[in-house]
Length: 241
Length: 117
Image 1 (spheres, one colour):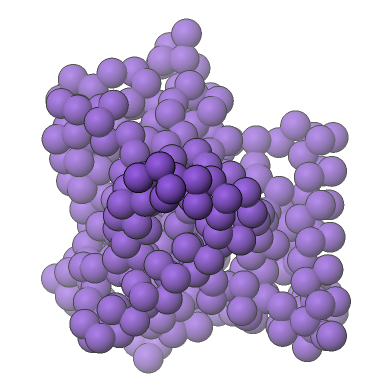
Image 2 (cartoon, chains in turn purple, blue):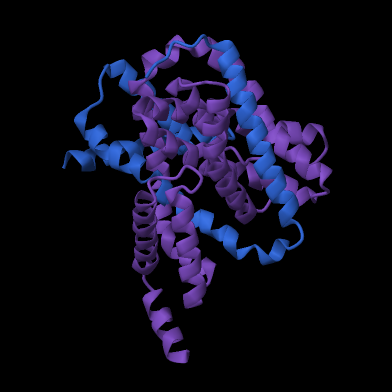
């Protein structure tokens, strides 16, 4: 083991090892996802995340060391979020067509997205820290991290909540859409982005560019709305004190 | 090369977002501000420059990979929260189902179906 450990120390002196690991897990995850004929209950990101966690555990590589190297990838999350402005612009005419119903739906749906889970967790006796970590579960990662820090939650648990919420949103949306007989890609996309943040948005882009644009819109509006109102609401009910 | 200048545009918008946040103390991420600014700029120009398309398309396709390193962290805090997980899972899964149903139901009520397919 000691020889392995020193090799691991050598490899992790460069961020390229963590970047390479992430790319490998992502590519294999995608390959398996395609091979399984794109199941909606098992998105590629979940397969890849499981593979990556398994690989880290097998090698005995501490998560903190990995995460430090992977910063070289995660820093791209900033420009990638900005890039979503492009599909948003391309779908602008269709969005403008629907601005009134979307403007009514968003505040209600975004509030309830946080409220339902918080109420259930609270009823089941979760601690204040856990509640604070779950509150931003439907918000895209870069915004959600800021909100969670403000509320006093754990960022690692938030990321888990984001994964579970995002992954669960996909089958929930397809089942509910079938149940309510909705086949409008705009509505499906908006619901995916509003509830399932980046993971739902990625799924929406798999459906069509229109669904993707509405998902980007839902994701960003939910992010902005929650970022502004959640910390305020938290203070009002006296959770943050 | 066009992809590179497009990438510089995206980075610049993100940095402008940071500056905006610094001066306004808005609790929004600079990525979202950059995204809205990019959308407004494109709307004013009336088209997407090929350089921005060349940089934006691959980045959007990689979005899922970029959040992976953070997401993996949850597997390493499972031990710390033992005993709490069932409550957390039930809250997230049931909460998500309820909120998806509410969202879609609301949208259906508010929008007359026009069947865009």
